[in-house]
Image 1 (cartoon, one colour):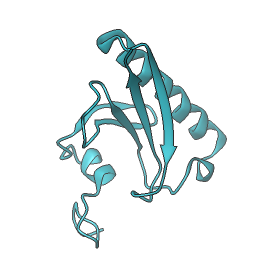
Image 2 (image 1 turned 45 degrees about the vertical axis):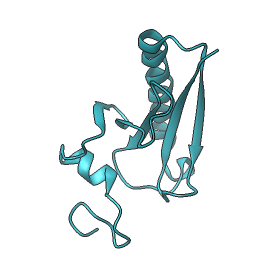
Image 3 (image 1 turned 180 degrees about the vertical axis):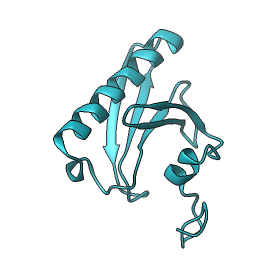
Length: 109
């Protein structure tokens, strides 16, 4: 990592959150950081980033996995309470950003 930027010119979101320099960061949870999604076409769309760079959920130990999935559900609970969507859809991808991150998408009727 080159400061807060990767070699391909992308913000090191996890490193910036650890340094309290990620402008999209909302809160720190036991397993990582919750941040606003870059594209906010759904009110309440949040992303959970881990405390450290890992490629997938499978690279975490069992305790870290459990905490990460619990934190995802807590993030969903908060979104349900504040934004009042009909449900939350959860998604763990690695297509564009090659590090573990989980999306919590509120779904509105």
